[in-house]
Length: 345
Image (cartoon, rainbow, N blue to C red):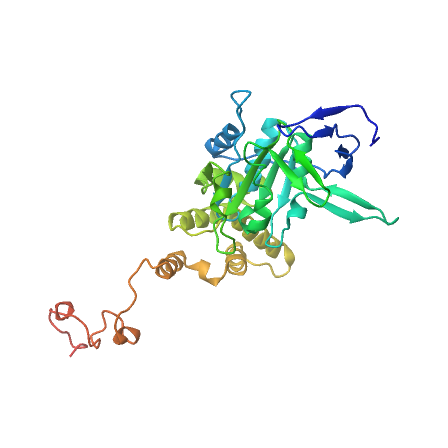
């Protein structure tokens, strides 16, 4: 981009001078940034229209002084949180930039990264987040609770009234366009950081992405696997719906992967083909683990692990079932009080 370009816009409340992006570059206070490319894929959001409307409502501004909200989308892995934001961006007609958060994400990764060129000169590359800020697009911070506090701290001024970030590496402040919107996805699992309260207070509201109903789950599988047979689709949907009722975390993504593997196994050897049921059972165990073959037992074990059932208090409980007649602590009221048959005698 020509550094002498006279076209410039003032964005945000910070008053920093930002030239209009041209040919993938933008100049901010004399520093030339190479912008990231927006995400170009698309797919429909199937079912659960209400959660999509809630997300879109967060990005509405109702007055010149009003600011958009930055919601966090919470749910189990594989629930389609990323797809939800992709669909929302399409409805808004704005470019979408996705940044995948990790445990080793640094502040400069989130903002501006210096890159050494072949000629020995340093060029500055804007992250997807900064590119969305400059271009007036939508940024998705995917799996945000995998990111450490130091990185979150660099974004604190972006998600309040200041609407800007400061790149120490490039030595510039970067204001956000008035059209900039953002959302953060967070998985419900243990391999994450605790988000500090001063960041959580900026990421509001919390939108819970739940499990789809039976019809929506079938439609999701059919969309992603249009070549799957109805019988195998039905088996998978019944399995997923049963797991949802038992509050297990098997997701539509799990169902898609299970079906893909089963179909590949069926197609593998025409001389010795597996039956559909055999292929599906094998796929279930290989993709989700052998314990997935008995959902009720898996749910009971999970409940015990979470403290939902009392643990044995006596040493005898380690060696005898509660209803074992030989249990030394067995209550007399539990003893068999009917007539003994020949085998009991």
